[in-house]
Length: 139
Image 1 (cartoon, rainbow, N blue to C red):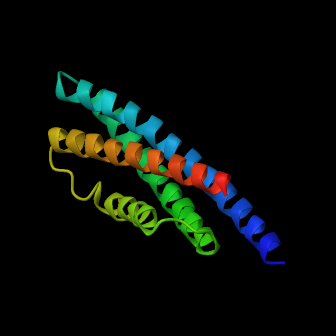
Image 2 (cartoon, rainbow, N blue to C red):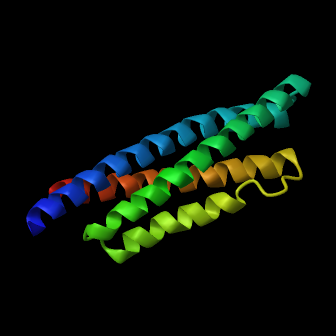
């Protein structure tokens, strides 16, 4: 009975992890788009480029919220799966970072810096999720 439960836990964790990873891929893609518009806005953009950049940032914020929910769900499914503690903590650090990523942007350069930093956090979290899913699949 215990092995059946473990397999079910692994299946649920894998499915939840795949959904979280897909949401992170969406964040990364939208962030890359926002960064391109941000660069244009810094180097000679106009009202249109500024509007598009902020629109993309709003979309990123929505996708981050979706990712946050999916990562939280994924963390819950890991309760029945043996995962090294340091990997679980890294997922939590992304969730915390995402909360502060867009607080009070003051200038275009600051927004661009935050987009770049968030992009790096997303890439790191994607790599972590891929490692976690590989670990889950090997069990």
